[in-house]
Length: 356
Image 1 (tube, one colour):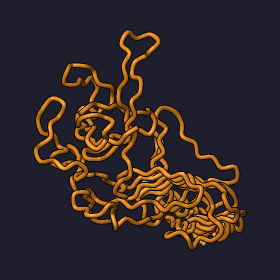
Image 2 (tube, helix red, strand yellow):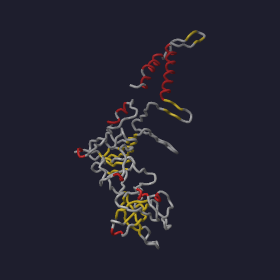
Image 3 (cartoon, helix red, strand yellow):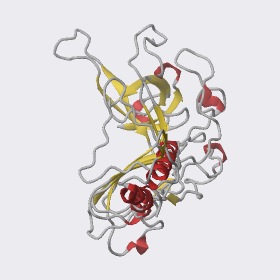
Image 4 (cartoon, helix red, strand yellow):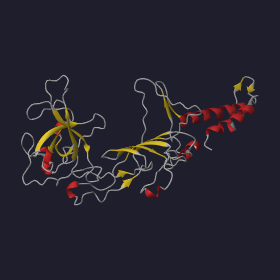
């Protein structure tokens, strides 16, 4: 295994690519520069490398460093061509920068480098790629806790396989935003957070690591989108968008069991071809500033429906109490025998629909 610099990635993003000799390239193939200080690899030269794994595939940026191994790339038991090729891992953490790991000064170049087919590469101009910005917004690293497995993207995405953290949490810079009673009770958090820091650029780095690196933590009040899968945890940072319902008011302190919390500016659940189910063994709560129900035939605003029923009920009470009367040949109608029941419906039963 050795470390090599990425100098070209253009051929990684389309199928059917070929090297400069016309040989087909596997998907995700990048051009790397090997040799130099790697004395056992011979003279400096540029070669193509393919992803080592199918899972967790990440195309590195130009100028980043990747770990590389040489391994069989043909079926040795059947192929007439018995050869090895180069396969790369994800970029190594050389600058402690989650967003961009360029090492532009690793090899001092007194003249433009050349690609496998000749010509200057973007690596020689310290450009990270074709669509990736040269100085992107900085993404902070997620605070790890003992035992965690964490997957992080360059742009503020993360998946944490974590747990309830109990004990001396003073060793951590950021504290968990969830709380539980039993140490190691599992929790899984998927979140997307737009970077808030300044720009990041390896070209401007004068040290071996980024001195501005810091930890961040998931926060339901600040993250753009989140999914929490809990076992026993209380999500203290959860703030419902509409909290008039009494059950909703207690959401941030609910700890009666496991829960899944989806939090974003907008949440869509779509049954593309068949059905969508909302099932609650005890209760299903649908709450919002406006609640709409719609079918092929009707579109119903819940407030408008209840207001309509209230007006209808008022008219029935007027008729049964004699406030409003039917005109008949014998004169106006008298008070209805069910007047008391109608007044009960209006003054007591109907009040159940109103907010407490």
